Image (cartoon, rainbow over all chains, first blue to last red; front, top):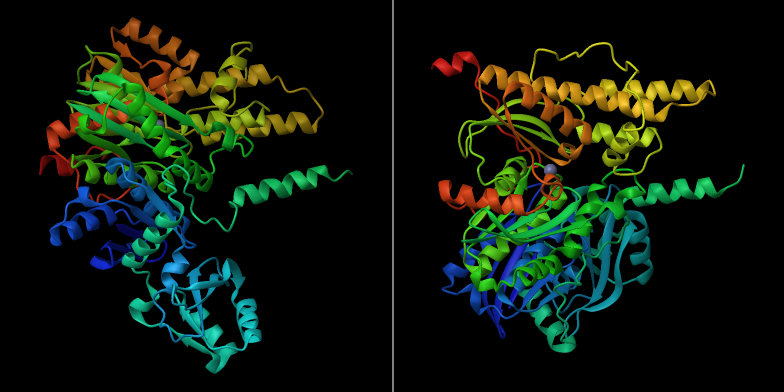
Length: 237
Length: 343
Ligand SMILES: [Zn+2]
């Protein structure tokens, strides 16, 4: 099983065999592209003495996160899955990210960068079976998110790569209710992506090679503007 | 030697299989025109979304149509620039992963170089040295090719690509998208009697500028509409097209005269324009120049040209690194300055 996630500034690739982690690498993705990932996979396979032909399933994080980043991950996944004749599954990036949190956490809020003043956020509760979704990934203003979490009255561990000012604003509003992940805790683990993909494949048996889509939580600017224009045109007078 | 080509630099998802750089086994193009039509131009984010949605299915179809099994493929070539970054990354990433999975070499191809190679696919007798004029919605470039793999950028547009100007003028005249073919048809019914710009500001250079011409059309049309006068759309189309072709013709044939090269090749979507073809053919005939252009299907963006170009590049230079970055502004280098040439 191979897992790939390129939705954030740091990308991740990991390979598992059953419960065993063969390799797991986190890489800082150069701004503007994650096209080094195939070379990184090739190197990691070589270092572990593995052959690409051993791969039986490709799992890729579908975001939320950078649309371009997610598309690169999925394009690589499609190439590998098609090329090897094995299935491809898309897994929710936030579920993989939530797996970085300790089982003792009450609530885990996963974050990814969005537009200025907004974040992508999801809410999970650690469980024996893995993180259980409390609230699905959605776009929030930082303030609304903090107010929502305050109303839940439980300690929250934030995981994910966000700007320092977002962390500062959350900390200011939530005070001691908020804790923040450190270092690699904030980066998806490719091995987690692979293991989520394995469970999903066993549960659904659905090869998503031609159907998988990034989690687009927003329509394109052009579509929004076009619709605004057409709506105005509909108004008589 | 069988090469799979991948092209996703603009609004066409294309996959092709080409044997030995010359023989097309399959050449599939998934056009996104319908998706972008209502916006009057290519929306980069939308284009990237469409590329990802169709690319694996299209690859499977290209193999099926050529009746090729994956094990028979020896090389994977993909466009790495110039173009829209979001789309480039989809095709480039998939191509690299295919090369990794199949354990065959990968080559990154310059899209504009691919356009030149569309001519080698179509004309087995074609050989450099040659001058190539590439005109499309994305590029307007005049390139000298002394031999395979060697290019010297003689001139390029300083603002709009010729095809881009065609699209914008077509929009102002209320024609459909993409504007080139519509404007071409309309121009055939009009007279090129309007002087849109007084003089060619870049005359004497090999560079192009079309934004002044485009603005002149926009202003003319707006003025007439404001005065409530009818717009002679066919005459405007014919006059605009006449002036664009005149500029292209001037640069190309002056370059041929100055370099003493006897072969001219055209490429890119605008090379399908009827006036351009007719006037270039007449001029070439008069000056003893051999003129080549690809058939329509190979003029516009396609992956067969990428596979062909990639094959010859691999023969000369071997594979590209697997971490090759996409380069949206990739270009041929202009000739070195006189002082550098002597050193
Ligand atoms: Zn092109």
